[in-house]
Image (cartoon, rainbow over all chains, first blue to last red; front, side):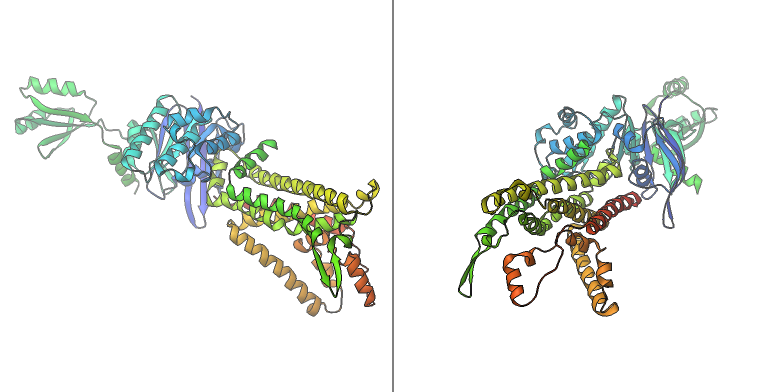
Length: 299
Length: 278
C-alpha cells in the first residue's frame, strides 16, 4: 500500500504547554481517516505542522515517499483548516485562479470544481458576500483544484447550520467514493463515524489508537430484542455460550455477544425455542461509546 | 520568478484601493510638470519657477528624482497593506497550505517591490525627458544623459524604503501600526541625531558619521536636497556673503549602506516569518 503521510515522534511545545507529544502514525492511500479528540487535544497543531504553518519542536514527518520538500509535496495535497481563508475583494473564480497559480494547475479546473460544490451560479460573486456554508464549500473546491492525493479537512462543519452540515458531508462522501484519501479532524464523533473507515484518536497530544474504526473495540457488538413475552425471551437466552451480559432497557432486552453471531442465527435459535421476535437489531457500539471507553482506560 | 510575480499581481489586481492609490501616485509624478507653471511676485519682481533652471538638463535629473521620491509614501501604503492584508485575511496561512513556501512568499513581495520601483523610475525618466525637452536651454545628448546616476539612486532609494515597509509589515502585521512605526522610527533617527550632535558628541562630527548609517538617513543621503543648487538661492546666498560648498553628487557610501539595509530588511522579514507559527 502507498503511504501518504508518515509522522514519527512529532512534538510541539508552546512554552510550557506540550500540544503534540511524541506522536507517530501513518496515513495510507485510499482510506478515510478521522482524527478524533476533544478540543485542545492537538489535532489542529498536528495538521498545522504537516501543512507547513507551524514549526515542530522535535521529531519528523514526510509526505509520500519523502523525496520532495514539504511545500512541493503540499501541491499534491488539498487542505482546509479552520475558517475558509480567501481574499474578500475577489470573486470565487478569481480566488480559485490564484490558488491555481500557487499550485501550478491549469485554470480550466476552476469551473469543474465549482460545479462539484454547487457554486457555479455564484462564481462571479465576491467572497465577502458569501454565507459561511458557501465559503466552506468554496474552500473545498479550492482544496480539490489539484485533484489531490489526500484531502485534509479540519472541522469542516464547524459553525454550519444543519443543511450546510448535510451538504458538506454529502460532498465529502462523494469525494471519498471516488478513491481520494481523506483526513478529517473533528471533535464530533458521529461525524467521523458516518464517513471514516480509520481513526487516529488523540488526547493531550498523544495518540491513543490508530487503526480501523471496527478494530477499535474487540467486542462483537450487541443485540436489541423485543418479544411479546419478554421474560420467556430472557430465560431462553440465558445459559447460551454465545451471549454475555444482558440488561433490560425500557421494553427491550440488550444482550452483548461473546462471539461473532449473525442476527439471522439468533432469530432461528429463538424461533426453535418457540419465541417469536417483534424487534431484532444487531449493532456495534457507537464510536462515542468506544471513544469514551478508550479515553477512560487511559486515565 | 515570473510565477511569483504573477501570483502577487493577481492579488493586487482586483483590489480597488491598491489600484486607486497606485494611480494617484503615478498621476502625482506627472504633476511635477505643474511646478513649471508656478509664478509669483516677490518684492515687485516676477518669478517663474521654470525660469530658475530647474528643468535644465542635467539638473532636472536631480530635481525630479528628489521631488518624485517624496511621493513614495503613497506606494508605501500599498506595500504595507499587501503584506498586512495577508495576515488579516489569514490568506498567508492558506497560501502556505496551498504549497507556497515562506521563502517564495517573501520573494513574491520583494519582486513586486522591485517592479514598483522599476515602473516608478521609468515614469520619472519619461516625465523628465518630456519636461527637459520643453524647458531646457541645452539639448545636446551628452548633456541630457549626464548625471543619470540620480535615476539609479532614485531606484535604490525606493527599493530600500519599500523593503523597510515590507519588513515592518511582516513584523507588526497591521498596516496602520506599521506605518505609524515607520514614522516613529523617523523621529527616533532625528532625536538620536540631535542628542548626539548637541549633547553627547557636541562640537564634533561624530554624530554625522554615525547617523549616515541609519536606514532612513542613508536613503535621504542618496539624493541630496536640490534647493541650494538653484540659481536663485545661490545668488541670494552670495549676496549675503555665504556660499554652499556641498557635494550634490550621488555618493558611494549611501549606496552601500542602503543596499546593505535592503538585504537586512528582506532577510529579516524572511527570518521572522520562518520562525513564526501561523
